[in-house]
Length: 198
Image (cartoon, rainbow, N blue to C red; front, side):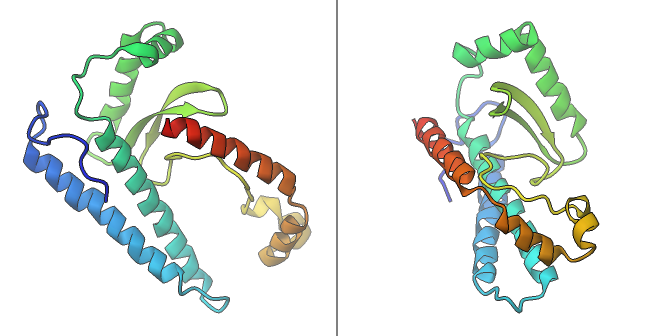
């Protein structure tokens, strides 16, 4: 677990008790559960039933995104709340003014009231622009990443050729992967990660 990056007794309108509980129980729970899921995934063999593998992989994604999103959340707390700098200018340019963007972000948050989820301002690598995303849970939005290899497993990707024989489709897919493209994506992702680590 990453420690809180601020003094939880010093935030305005958020109690130390709330912040510590959130950090230790929710974020900490995600980290602990991710570790347990990874232990179970290490035991997977070719004979492990698909429903077990699928369940573990779903939990792996949920807990990984929960961990990443919580670290980002806690990481952007502890300031004075006054928007400034390049992000303010970029959002103002994209929305007409910064207040309009803030209004949209707040409305997105309000839409989740009484439920659960995340509102995430994300730099969209596809568009090259920041965008606000809604997520009803940990798996409905990309927490952070750059796809390297993508395989469509919806039936429309293989049914006409293979019927329900998904394994045969997967074999065919791997016969057609362009690893040069995958390696180029990896190189870009590594360069981006270096910049993001700053």
